[in-house]
Length: 313
Image 1: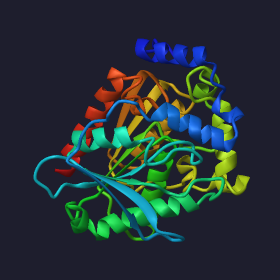
Image 2 (image 1 turned 90 degrees about the vertical axis):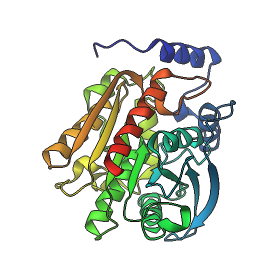
Image 3 (image 1 turned 135 degrees about the vertical axis):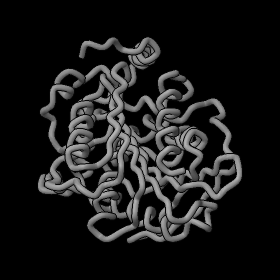
Image 4 (image 1 turned 60 degrees about the horizontal axis):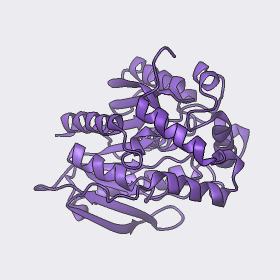
């Protein structure tokens, strides 16, 4: 990469190094989940929205908890279903609470965050099926959450980006629901570790290659699952018919190249695609909204919000 690492990110990474935190892949699952939550949940009060409500929606194996963020103003608002990152093993409604609040305000959407089942307790495709079920419920019950019926967007960051593409593929292959837009933030797109960005950013930039190896090993039931297009969208022979897409990638990220390959594949499949590159950022920067507060995170969320508004309203 010829770009220079953002100075605020550099300061954050130095701080992590000084704390002596071990990398996530070296921690037990319980400790990794706690550490990820501690790093992701800000101490400061997050952005305010009009209302935040919690409920459950029917899932394939259990009721799925969701958190619904409604922006200020006169509804109904377009619904945006959000799938959090964390390598399919980590993360929850709390780790992405601040991001979902800002996303609701930036996009003027009702954001529905999905607390899908995590691996390794529930391996592929359990979490994906939860995300699809929640998306289908939102499409069929928009009025009950002050959402506008007949319009629908999905979004996810990192592993949540892979889940979003998987939901888009399932919706296409199962005949619905119709999805109008998808936002994929530094998505996981391929069960492989052979890109230049994996080589360049294997360690030192928060997410490491060994973290990703652990995440994939915990997520998949077998190596064969890694070849399935619902897990690895770049393995899909056909990406036609997916929703118009906003694909965001970070320069100092092991996943950079597969995200950009996904944007290219979508575009070549005839999917209207915005390929947005934050070359000075690291993986996970969208959730760095307080402690640390990254200016570029707010900037990117505003860019996402503008794209969603222009597509849905």
